Amino acid sequence: MKHLDVAGKPAIAVPIRRTVKKEVKRLNKELLDRGIGVELIETKLDEKEIAQSNLILFDGTPIEKLLGIEIKENYCRILLFLIGRGNLLQNRSL
Image (cartoon, rainbow, N blue to C red; front, side, top):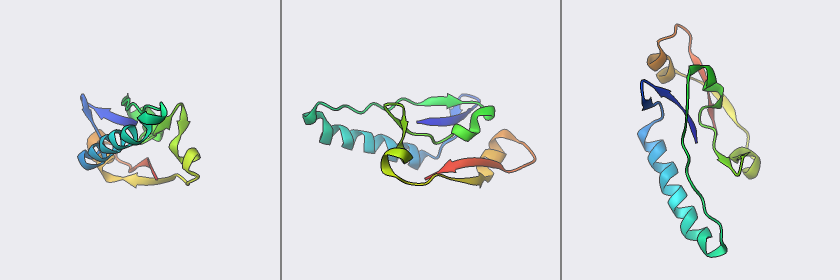
């Protein structure tokens, strides 16, 4: 999971982070019997890489391709607050 990091702190909502970790555990319980393991690797991004924020990869493939869903970009006021720029910043969402 890729997310913006500001001053050493992840710029991702605590409930979202908690949910992702919980789902990784659930997937491991379901898939380990089949010899498949899921590992959560968090990649910190700087403000130049915001377009990749919230990117979730499985074996290098974005989750949206595996699930056949569309990614939308939205404007995030929280990112604006964290970075302190004058314009609203775009962010990925499922």
